[in-house]
Length: 227
Ligand SMILES: Cc1cc2nc3c(=O)[nH]c(=O)nc-3n(C[C@H](O)[C@H](O)[C@H](O)COP(=O)(O)OP(=O)(O)OC[C@H]3O[C@@H](n4cnc5c(N)ncnc54)[C@H](O)[C@@H]3O)c2cc1C
Image (cartoon, rainbow, N blue to C red; front, top):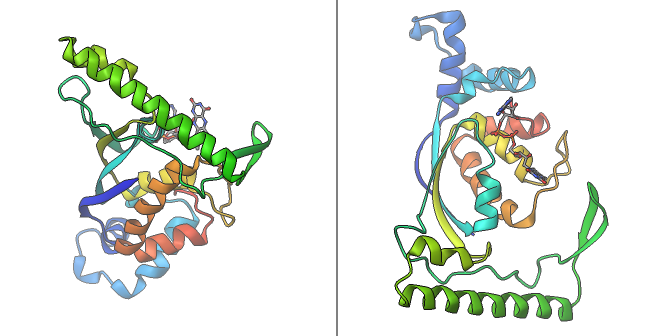
């Protein structure tokens, strides 16, 4: 999974400035940055969410189509553009689970966990994926060679094919995304996202933490609940 932060305008300070307008109006000289930490703690704890909409993160992400689909389920405060399978020939880049990706599901729906599995199971999974990808890619290429439009030919490519997209979000919508797409023992509401979208979300969270350390700290402190 390739996640790159291409543009950002995200600080703890602007969250506090936006929140303080309610009490200081246009008297910006009354703004006291020394109180930012306490203010962000209060905003997060009491779920005063709108100040956290001031800011943007734009990421360029390359991931398998099945992960892109999961990301794009997030609608509020998220803007997307994705590469086109109609206007360009797609690249032969496919997802194969790494050796440490847990492979075996145990338990029942809504209450299951994953175990590592054996080397033999990983070998079966990776070889089956490789065989399917090669077959699908050859079919795609044979259709293109026969003059068939890209938008028709692409239908044979599997969801493990990589795609690239841009997503722009604000700190609040990013926290909502992270609350659902990361797995954390300290979360107030536990989520059980697929490993591959976690691999994307973890990289997005690292940028969030770097740029907005106080907001991130309070997000974690208050149970990873988006305000
Ligand atoms: C572990 C996991 C398993 C999942 N499994 C499935 C699955 O099997 N099938 C499936 O289809 N999806 C599945 N999803 C996707 C899930 O149902 C959500 O679509 C996705 O997590 C986005 O969440 P959201 O709607 O809260 O986010 P956003 O779309 O970003 O919305 C944010 C918030 O805005 C509000 N909101 C947004 N749109 C509306 C609206 N139209 N009406 C009212 N309020 C709105 C809600 O408060 C919402 O929480 C799964 C998600 C997770 C994390």
